[in-house]
Image 1 (cartoon, one colour):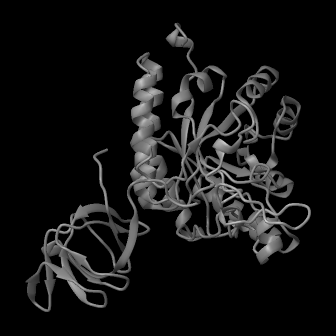
Image 2: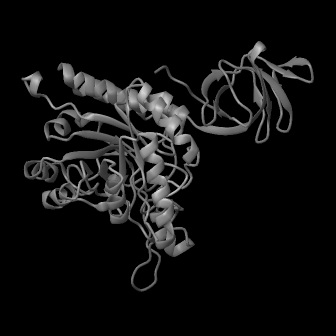
Image 3: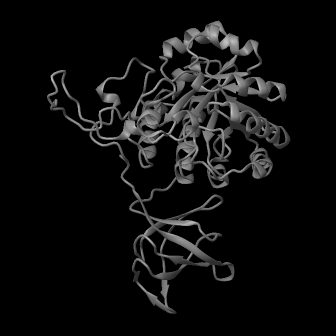
Length: 408
């Protein structure tokens, strides 16, 4: 660990957010957030932020003292050029702090609009000369390829003074820096245009050259574990990395809150000299309570082997699960209550629930239920019930039941 704290490199913590609720969940922990509109993004399902909402969204980002980066990282086809111009003009008027892009058309036109440009990991920047090339055309930061080792990152740092950003946490996939054609080939849904159907998370069967089925231990042959570098904050900071990036533009606000808080704690512990392996392990265990496929260190310390794959299960390895319950029909502010249509399943007093929407995120316990004017201890699927809520909710907010909470 560095002794001279005045010269310590303290990387920016940059969180992916999908909406205002996720922004508010990490506002006290992050230094910056990155997000996307409902177009020209590799997260096509992130539909909450519309162009006419961007200025208000960025204003709230700035009110919290954060920087806001707009992701425009899909492939730009001929019929996307006008939409690209529209998006960039909207970003200028909204005063976005930077555009994250990799398609040369997006880079050039962002520069033409005097917008700062961060080069997306999609560009697969893997050496200092490439980093310097992007600097020469106006980029202020590059998000390095996810396939680099820590030693390679150190070498790149020595050869360039452009800002370097790396992923430290979140989903990984079987592709080169996220550029994948498997989904497009199998289902006609292009990952490079934000519609990945995640075939790498499917069950696959391995066959030998003679056609015989190979007996293997595990079914999810190409499903990668999630990246987690919480235990290696000092090595990353001392490598000269300027920003730590957390994947999560489709994650719920509870995930965003917990993960940002843990990385903030680790970074602050490093800054004041109290970071140690024991604290990092506790933070890692805390983060494991959110959705994950198991954790690995990716390519940072060499090419990942079988331990980097979630071969037995492609889904959630966390102890807590979210199960859909229903939707909010009405909110009654005077009574701090809401009516809920139980579309997927019933609920009972004592259940722990999440109420979530584009501007809503509440974790609470069901303390009372009203059905047809009378109190009850449980309600069934298909019924409409009243519940007390611990904050403002909105019509069409979704209600989920979870099996575990922890304080953070």
